[in-house]
Amino acid sequence: MAQPLTVVARIDLSCGYFDALRAEHFVHRFPPHFHDTFAIGVVEAGTAHIRTHRGEWLAQPGSILAFSPGEIHAADSSGADGYTYRMVYPSLEVMREIAKVPSSGDDRMPVFRTPVIDDAEVAHKLLDAHVPLMAGTWRGRAESKMVRGLRSLMERYGTDQAPSPLRPSDVEVAAKARDYLHDRWSKPLRLSVVAEQFGTTTFHLIRSFRRVMGVPPYAYLVQLRVNRAQVMLCSGSSVSDVAYACGFCDQSHLNRMFKKAVGVPPGQYVRQVGLRLS
Image 1 (cartoon, one colour):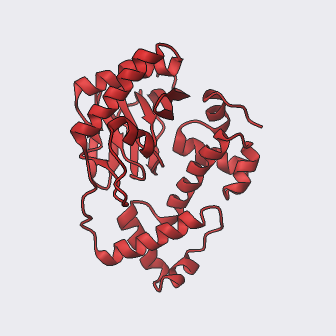
Image 2 (cartoon, rainbow, N blue to C red):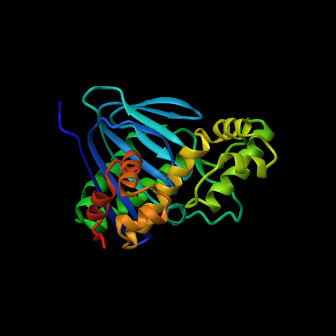
């Protein structure tokens, strides 16, 4: 079996900066998770099994992976040798700049019609740009290709978020709980207290949240903390300080949850994006 390897880097373009990743022979199973940014990439080898609330897909070599901010998804390898893929994680603001789409002024989040897309032309642009950008070379040509690829992807497959087919009562409970978690992401969580505050039971809260969000409240909270940890690490905070500030039990707990969600431990993540741990 080939040895897995995951490398991350920070790409700095004229329209903004974002993280990039390449994973070779990736066999790690990504549980349901989400990003605060877009997550867009291409499978180079192997086959990935992708799951979202919209269904399941097999992403094969040449398939584009496209997830919007907050979209919960899971992935695992369909073969013993894993799969190899490249990703970029541009923010909503960067994508709007690239796609020349003005802010809509409301809460609608642009999504892709499907999270797995087969478009050889766009995939080639993204791959052709990703290699030199991660290496820090060919900046002008590579940036132009990356921008054209992301713009084409949004123009061809982007759409407004479709109305939810879920029950309004579940959506209401989940939205209130989600806002509560976003406001108190670093604090200890007691679901019985949250449920009582919203006039429901703990069982109903968990069931409604999972139906709407795709994961139970605690799993969502852990992902929130990991996402905030990424931001704090990139601003120069130490791993130990981040673990405490983000509500993890200790540094080991942060290391486990961070690697599970991001694919690499926090120390490796910070070193590879060109920063130093304080």
